[in-house]
Image (cartoon, rainbow, N blue to C red; front, side, top):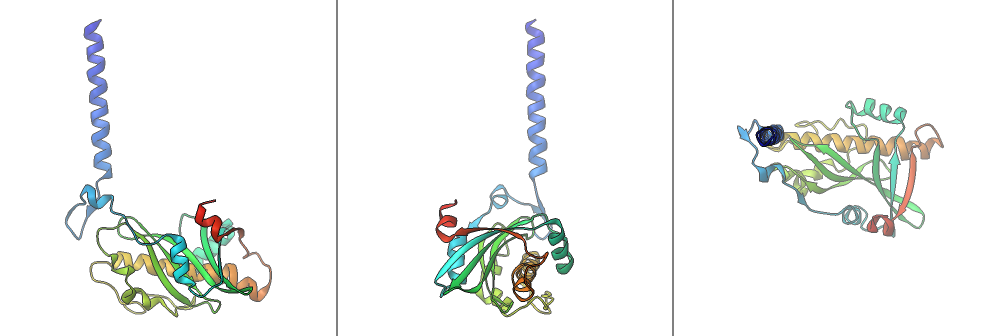
Length: 228
């Protein structure tokens, strides 16, 4: 009886060990540029620069009020936006901060999460009522390299871009050596934000209510700040 229990215990420990080893191997990420696996420290890299509320204040420095809307795209809306930007994305919900002054909208700040080289980076893309990018603010960067995309000397290149601009690397946007994937990721997110602004706000303002109007739930700046 004792012998049987001992064998069962050893088999259980062996199974747990193999499972843990398999999970560890699955979690390892190979970096082709570095020609090695990422270290545990690099895998959990996360540099937080701004909260969404802080980014919104930078995006709308002169606005009298800032509120946040949660945009829920329908399948048709999501498909339309994917066709316009030329790539598919998993999410159908976006947070958008809106700056207002005396009842007039100053612009929209779309929170974007797009995959850089290995992990997603989070940033806000500001779009004004003319449909032009006003600025880009990086909130969280999770890669061990390529954080230069958060520097103003790089992302100022997006200012003035509209939905009509292709936003191509090395043509519209100068690349950063060693951070190509992050530059592609940010460029894709900027393009998506411009199309979201055009389809969900600018288009509906000029043409009235249409199928392009997404489901939106408003949150005041205080509510969003408190996480309600």
